[in-house]
Structure formats: structure tokens, C-alpha cells
Image 1 (tube, rainbow, N blue to C red):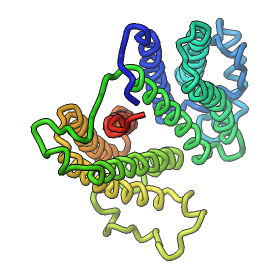
Image 2: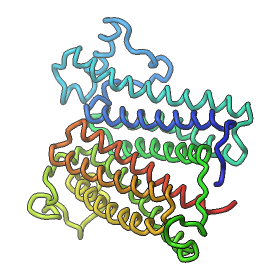
Image 3: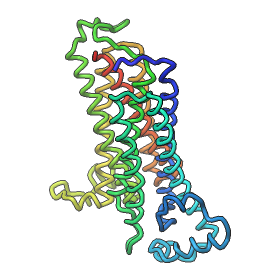
Image 4: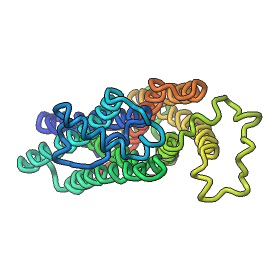
Length: 358
């Protein structure tokens, strides 16, 4: 874990930073595509020939005719003009183009760094696994789109969640590698500048902090997945009130005694679970921040402050998104807020892990 930053790995770190940003942009564009209901505008998957948009009126006409045969057009967009079609087509095209760009941005530099010997053997498996996730992400994207090209033109929320979570897991691995290559962070259990003596903290305190940080990350990942369910089912539109859902905390449509697999396809139930998980996540992260404050190392304290600030902003964005019936700018902020909170939690966990010697 104690890998010092030096000039030899600076290029590798810049590449990893670019990859992290590329994945965030890809998630952002994907969210915008979903919110504007543009994802089903391209009815074919052509990894090579689809890298260029239609070049003239005839080609645009061909693409529009393909879309006119889709269930989404026949059931929801009948009478759409070609100019309206172009707007949703280009957004989905940019989303796919971002995926291609991210793949090339990863593959080509990876080959160069590998030939230069910049990738050590210990990390080689991680980089190859990220490459596998990138390929799987593209395939999952088309598998998701196919679920909406049927009689019921609604993307399967399970496939949507899988598509998002693959991107999130890629980001986690990339961000972790970035921290390992870029930061000189040595938090030693016996050192707590300006705070509780190291002997008083001890191994037990560090284990407790790691537990709460790990639990926070785990719950956040579940919450991100539930957020994808909310998006896929348009569950953010069923109860636009807070803190109650209708006349109570538990809406009358939800019966906790009869929850089954089918419940996870019900918009009201999914919004209810998403709300309850938000409360639980807020509670657990607050405990982590409180417990973590005992280790008064300056860098770790900064990470705790960032975690709590990101958590607070994320909760506010979530409530505003709900109350105003999912306005696109706030909904996008809410989605990116989850990635920001995840990043700060990973940073805090990295600081705690850096106390371990190899």
C-alpha cells in the first residue's frame, strides 16, 4: 500500500486520472440519455460502422425509418418529426461514442505501458480485469437496449442496473489504482498528530473505523443499484412528497409482509426501499464520520469532512429531485453526487488501509 509518488509513475497516474474522468463522463451521458428517453433511438448495434453518425439526408431518412418500426415510436412517439428524432438519436450516438472512446483510451495506453514495463506483475491482473469489464460493459449496454425493442418499449431495470454497476465497479478499480500510484500517504497507527495518542487508538479503533467505512461503501453501492431501479421504472414520479409517501412513511400500496421478487418491479415499492436505504446510509455514514474523527490525522480528517459534505449534498439533491418530479439537471447532479460520495469514501478507506504494512 505504501507506494510513493515519483516521476516514473506520473504518466501512469495521469492516464488513470483520465480514465476515471472518462468513466464519470460516460455515466453522466448515460444518465442524460435515460432522463431524456433517448436510449432506444438507435435500433441496431454496429460497433465499427456505427462509429459515424448519418452523413446526409438519405442516411438520416434510413435511420428514421428503422426507428419508426420500433415499439417506442409506434406507442409513444407517433408523429415525431425528423428534427426531433435527430436530437434523441445524437444523444444516444454520443453515449455510444463515449463508450468507444473510453475503450480506446484504456486499451491503447495500456499496451504502451505494458511494453514499457510500467505495469508491475501484482497489478497486471487488475488491469486485465478492467479491460474485461469494459468489453462486458459494451455488450451489456446493447443487451439493455434490446430489452426495450420489444412489444413493451421499456428498458429492463435489472439490465439498466447491471449496465450502471459495471461502470461503477470499473470506476472503483481505476480510482483505487490511481490512489495507489499517486499518493504518498502513510498513516501509522501509533501516530495521531494533535489528537488521541496512538496507543489509545490502537488496532481495535482502526478496525472499527474500517468496518464503518466498508459498511458505508457497501450500502452506497446497494443504493446506487436501487437508484438505477428507480430510473428504469420511473419510480421517482409516483410519490413526489417528503418525508411522507402520501399519508404515511409506508405507502398503502406496500405490504412488508408480502414482499417477493415481483415487488422489485413495482415503482412504489422501489421508491420506498430507495428512501429507506437513504436513511440507513445517512445514519451509517454519520457513525463512520463520528468514529473516524477520533483519528485526528490531518489528511484523514479532511477525508471525513469531504465525506460528510458529499453525503449532505447528495441527500439534498435527492429530496429536491423527488419534490420537483425529477428535473433533469438536479437528477443528473444526484447521480453524479453518488459517484462523488463513493470517491470520498474510497479515499477514506484508502487512508485507513495505508496503515497496514506490506
